[in-house]
Image (tube, rainbow, N blue to C red; front, side, top):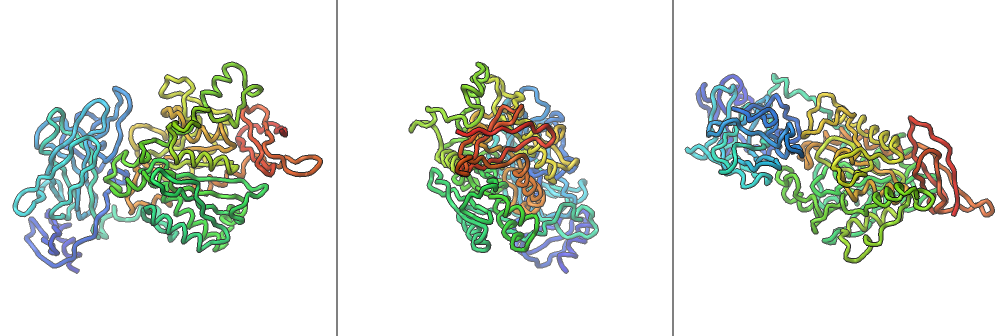
Length: 604
C-alpha cells in the first residue's frame, strides 16, 4: 500500500522518492511523507550497453559533433578503427564547464541505485571524466541532487579510458530522469564518457512503456551466469537427468589446469555411427564473451528435457546427429571476467588466456601455404586443397601455442566433425571464412573460400532466424552497419584474423565452421539471459539441422565390404575436397541454391 501511495505522489508531483535506511521520503512540491519500506534488491542495468535504452532516451547539454552525441554515451561502445570515422567511442560535450550533463530518460519511475562510467574509446585522443555529480527529476524542469547526508555528493570517476568504475548512490532515488554532471576531467582532454545506470523499475500500470515488448521465455531453464564449479554441476545434473542420450568428457586442460568439458548428446553417446554426422558448438574462446557459454548450457537442458517429452523435432535431431557442446574453450579467461562481473569486466578483461594468448589468432596459418601453392598451379595435384598438414614450426615445443588450442586441435582430429559454429560476443553478425585476407598487407579484403555459397547459406540461416539480428528496428552495436548485408559478412572483409579456428577447421579437417557474434554486450546482465535465449533458440536448432544438407554416403572396399577411411570425395566445380571417416562414411555440405555437380570418390 505504501509503495503504491509513494509511486502515486511521485507520478503526480515533480518530486523524487528516495529510499534509504528503510524509509521512503516522498514529494518535493507536494510536501513530505515518511513511511517504512524495505530496501530494494540490487538493481540491474537500464540497458545503455545492451541497447534496451534507445537513442531517443539519451540527451545531453551539448555535443562535440553527432558522432560523439549523447546516443554514443553507452558503456563499452567502440569507436571506428580509422582516422575520420563518423562515429567515435562515447559522448563528448561541446563545451568545457561544470554545467555539462548526460541525461537518461528511464520512461518510467525507476529506483536508481548506481552509475558506472568509462572514458572515451578512441585511438586518437585520451579523454575521461574524473569526477561527477548526479541529479534526478520527474519532469526535466525541477532537478534534485544526489546527496551524501547534507552535502551534494561528488563521485570519483575514471583514471583511464577503459576501466569501468561503479559508484553506488548513498541515497537511492526514485525518479524518471537521471543526469550525470561531470565536475572534472583529464587535464589534457575534454569532457567525454560512456555510462551505464543501475535501476529497478517501479510499478505503474498507467505507463505504456512498462507493457511487455520482448519475448517471454516459456522454457524453465537455469538462467544465470555459471562459474566453473556451477557449470560442472549443471552438466552433471543434465547427464543424470538424461543418462541415455548424454555423455560428459574432457578434451584437455587450460593453462591453470581447469578441464575443458564437452557435453555429447546422441542416441548412442560415446560411439560414432555410420550415416550419423557429427556437429559441434564451441563457446568461450574469448573468456569475457560469455553469452555463448550460457546458451550452450541452456541448450543442454533444453535438448534433454524436450527429448524426454517426446518433442518430435528434438527427437529427430538427437537420434540423427551426434552433437558436441564445448561451453568454455577459455575457462581461465572466463573466471577472470566472472570475478569482476557483468558491467565491470570491461571490453577486454578475460578475453585472453592466462598466458595472454588470443585463441582466435593461435591456430596454425594454413591459408598462406594453400594460396602460395595455388599461385604456382600446384593445387590439387601436387598440393592438397583440403587436409592441409600443420607446418613443422607450429609443432615445436617452444612454439607459442596455448594448451587450450592444442586440446581443440586434437579434438578436431579425433572426431569427424561436419559442421560447427564458434560463438562470440560484442556484435550482432555472423561471419564466415576465410577470416584471413589473401593480400597479406590488407586489413580488409573479400576473401571467399571454394565453398562460398555454402558458407553464405549457413551464415544466413543463423542470422535470419535470430530474433535480435532479424529485427528491422535494432540499432547498430558500435559503428558497422551489418544490416545492409543481411547481418552476415565474410570474415576477412570485416577485419583480417590470421590463425583463426574457422579457417583452420576448413583447411585441416572436413568441418565447415562459422562465427556467430551473439550480442552487442559481451557480458549481458543475468536479467537479460532469458531474452537472449529466446533470441537464439530457433537459430541454434535450425543451424544444427543444416548438418544434414548436401550429400552423404559410404565408400566401401568392393571385395570385403568394409568401409575405407580417408577416401577423397571430390565435387566437380568445387576446389575443396573432403575425406571419409574411419568407417568409410562421409558428408559433403553443398550450396542449396547452386548446382551440386557430380561427386567423385577415390580410395587410398
